[in-house]
Image 1 (cartoon, one colour):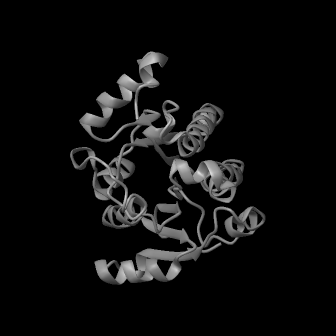
Image 2 (image 1 turned 90 degrees about the vertical axis):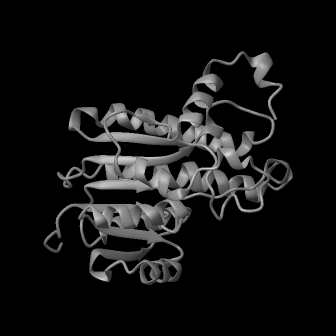
Length: 244
């Protein structure tokens, strides 16, 4: 293990639009970032486009669904992290997911199975005394089951519940676990979807919520989405059934 270059952030699924903005924000705050993704070339291009110093970011290959590689990936990290962000994502629209098992399974693996696999390894590493925070990027789609997106939503709901339990499990170790419950994000994953423009959030807005995470478990960026989140939680089932 090399001498740590200050505080270290490990971002898993680092080629997501939110994760890339988080890379820049963390670097600006003085962190060293380990950006892990299948898309290492895209990340290198991003660093060049933003003039982010290569010395502040290490780009590694990570595949959320290649479970048997996760232990070796973690053991080979150049530095153990202070902060971990899980931002890997995959989306199949609900009508396709209902008939395409491979697409449904991919969402389950990326959002839940992959997260549990790698985050369990990270959380159970008692040799890493500097781990202070784990953050998961989830979705309002996981708050209530709705007929338009319940397969995607169910994978995010499972991820959120895992993080809730992990938070309790790690409380005695003084490690904070946060979940970002995000609404619609203007990103490559939602490109082509018919979504209301007034509710779209920019990736950098979500990334700011990530890097400024406090002690609370659930963070819902954006006032409109906070209102929607609270309504969804208390809405009677008979009204939820009328939602799109």
